[in-house]
Image (tube, rainbow, N blue to C red; front, side, top):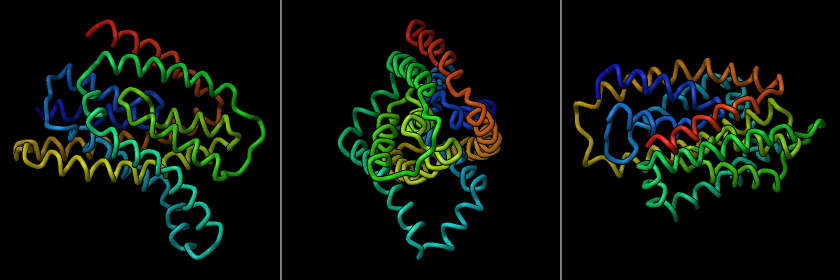
Length: 254
């Protein structure tokens, strides 16, 4: 993998992770186009690490506030909701890990998944006008949406934010909960992939992988800012057109 390839993959990840168009789906397509083949999905994990860092920086005030108010019932309740919403993804990975990895090898499956993502994004039009707090039922439903989004081509942010909006959660809170929810999932995926790929990892990949992390961090930060603006304008469903088109092209072209 060249540095140019690494730069493209990192930029692609940063831009697509927070925009609801499935970063994993685009990375699968790009890896095949660039003829990049690394054991497991190490490229994707490296790219996700960069965008994970951008979440920490973007929400640094909120994260610091959580750390400073850990003893309050409000913070403990919020963390409990995050924990409940994380469980479905953990169970899905534990019991369907091999199945998930096979999906990373098929552009046709990614195409179908992107098409489904497009349909889901159109459902954001059904979001409720009034806002309500996150409770156990809503946390579990959002968690199930995230678990489904482990499949490459299904947008994690698209699934979780759309689900939250339909459940009546305010736009900014829906986005924050969605990206806070991504933290344990991405960390867990990173650990699992490192264990799976350690024997096949080559030293020549170290610098390109590092470049992917840096580029995805920078592009991810600005993509996150852009998503919040789009979300506040109520135009999230616009991305549905893009996903439908790319999904159809991906399915028919490979």
